[in-house]
Length: 158
Image (cartoon, rainbow, N blue to C red; front, side, top):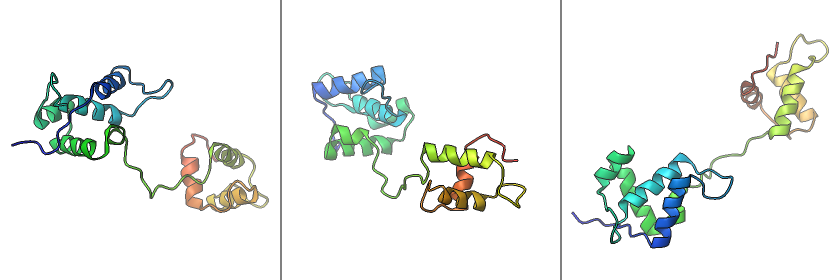
């Protein structure tokens, strides 16, 4: 059966992918994700240009421990949108940025380790959420967001 989406890398594209796989660095100081490296390896093995190995999807899938459908989808993406977008993850529009940045998290943790408010024996998540708003770390925050933030730390709240 003839392939519908044929990958034929130019010599520049092939060199770029080989350098990415070989060094693991696209730009100085930045490391690509494992997904990006796997995609680069798939494209190199799927290359149908003259003098290239031109492996089948099944051979590529077995060699790189991915599904043949993954190989097919990547070949299709390369043909439709090009090399750079084929290597990158899809944007995730529903992801919200975290409420607290690093400095705000540090202040919240410091507050939780400090003495509790008057009349209380210890901090509660709701008290900490209210305190974060009082300190103007955020406009609003739920006690659940406070819990998740504190869970990341190894500090004892008691």
